[in-house]
Amino acid sequence: MKDGQLVSAERAVFESGWRWLNTLGPLLGLIIVFAIFAGFAPSSFRTWENLRMIARQTAIVGAVALGMTLVIISGGIDLSVGSVVALSTVVIAWLLEYGHVRPLVAALGGITAAAVFGLMNGVLITKLRVVPFIVTLGMMLVVRGAAKGIGQEQKINVDIGRLAWLDELMARLPKERSWMLLSPGVWIVIILAIAMAALLRYTRLGRHAFAIGSNEQTARLCGVAVDRVKIIVYTIGGVFAGLGGLMQFSRLTVGDPTVAVGLELDVIAAVVIGGGSLAGGEGSVLGTMVGALIMTVIASGCTQKGLPNWVQEIITGAIIVVAVAIDRLRHRRTL
Image (cartoon, rainbow, N blue to C red; front, side, top):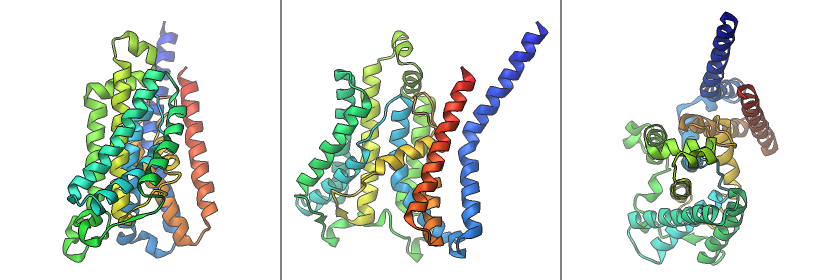
């Protein structure tokens, strides 16, 4: 009996250690990556202004990754988010330039368009019983085509007088607003991250998303409205992709149907590096944001060091492979 208790205690300690590694591992990885580039990159890498730039560059991927975190936790995936970001920029630009609406209405219009396609993803996945990979792969092309059609395969330029505050979301802070420390868009993403963390931890939707991702059949037998939850999850994912599109528009100040190609890979990588499992049932907002920061720090460090783009891609890809390998090892240990 004592031997059995000892084994149980050892197993509990081991599982606790894995949980701590899963929680603190991405943060430790960020510290290591930053320290490496701080030692080898030029001194400008360690400046406050560069840290602000890293935060601005992370905001777009971070905003979209918040929605992707919820989707992956529920056992799904969304390959259309890059195209949805592009569509949002085009819709916002079109509404400003040709619709002559207020900036807030244009921003809400872009986010609403993104939410509609997120809703469509959820409905198709649940009603047609098609795997999310196939549905969102097809939707990726549909949305990109729609963005090109609205823009007539060209960028939509917006008169600077119509932008109002939209171009300030991702801009460098002027001296008179240096007290804000970070650009408004970065603060918006931070606030949304806190809201998403609260949703996952304290709401029924968050608990049901974890339950579906862990074991969909069991969740259904326990009374969870699986189809409804999935539709809501993909709609929320679309909303966050629309917010990412708003940040992208603020950065470019044009509606570009060709922007954000491959962004979905960066977003998924941020979730995976942050401890999210592609098998579903695992993930955290803090881990996702840290994962997005890791990729941005790598990009910034490689650029300032003068390393070619292919080196950055190799480093990022290697980190993703290691993150997935650790996730697989953790699942084998818990079986």
